[in-house]
Length: 172
Image (cartoon, rainbow, N blue to C red):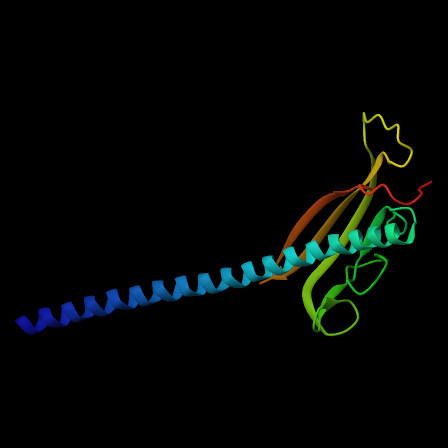
């Protein structure tokens, strides 16, 4: 009679252990998946920041060369590459960034990331500018990174206003 109870107890124990292992495996899978998604989010954040830095570098070059601070930073939608000293107009579909040593558009292995830099010229409203060197214009920069993960599209957007705070360079 006791042998039947031992068999039932053994079956219950196996069932409980199997359930616990399945739950642990499910949690492990979820953590691994979330870790990959968070890694992609960090990469997207860095790529978005790099897009902003590309535009800032153009402004800085304009200051150094005595040009208008927003020369070459026209309103529009662009691709930006850290190796370039200018923005490339976006034509048609978004290009995938490639990873060699750095992310770029020309060489290396294709990645799932795509970058868009949007620029819009704005005017400061209600500002009384008496100094002719100061400008009442600023640029609104929006960098968006798109990527796919497990069949779902994600995006990360960074916005910044860019001013002529150094007040250098003649502008029309």
